[in-house]
Image (cartoon, rainbow, N blue to C red):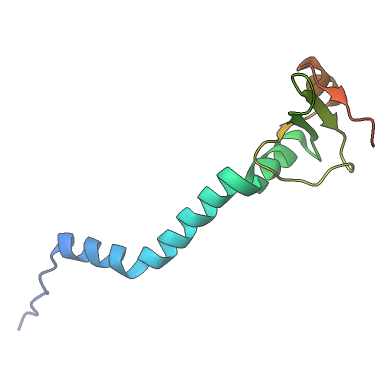
Length: 104
């Protein structure tokens, strides 16, 4: 006797996978969007790995005439923030026109 294998409709099985995992996919998309637009921790983590240590943080402050661009050395800032830009060295940060924050 031979056994009959069940017929599988691949279109239905792929739709079933999406339905079963839509909550997990929604959470992943929400976390990624939150990080991109609000926290910026993944960008900070990328620069920690790329630079081999804590990067220099450059932030633009819109205060006064035209604002100012300041950089903070490692240990003098809180990581994250979607508006922050990171560089591996102080020289790279100062080449962008940023000046060292006096309140360090």
